[in-house]
Image (cartoon, rainbow, N blue to C red; front, side, top):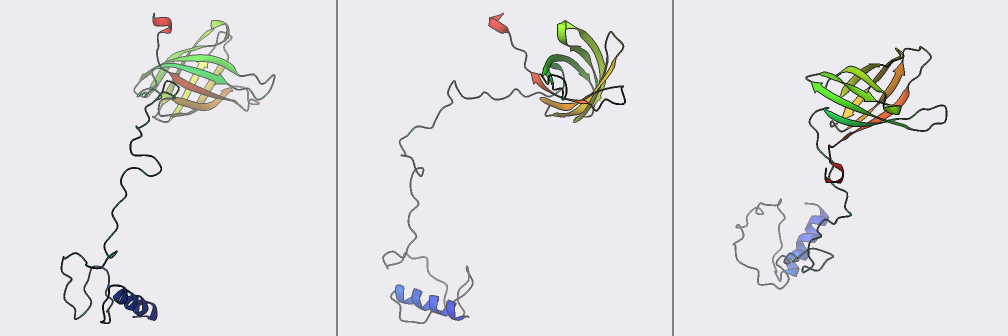
Length: 189
């Protein structure tokens, strides 16, 4: 035993009103040469463990649990496939820099994606692509025969992040994001 353990054992013996010199043993074991302690309550005041506080800390126990209010943000819808409507935001790095909004209407069969990209002025551009559970690649050809590739990753079937590129070798790509939208009826129709 080191000096600190001896001093602590002596103080503990004095605090309990004992006159014998205490021996120190590892937690859960009896000291050598001493009988195992009996399961009797201690007679010394303050020797027992203090009772656990009742109720929650910092609040009165009678206060009700908070219930969600109408202003709380609702849980996001949980999607299990890429099927559905996606709201797309293309964010050009040049020009006026204004975000361009459009929609994907996607159908997934195994790892194949097909659908329609509805762009400005209701222009409908068909696309095909692949999806491996995380990474996607879509190829669309518009009426002017311009081939556009959109590739990136999807997070939990609810968000896409990627890069839109054309066949032009000087094209460094344009970032885009897309959010899967839940089908809802507007105005109860």
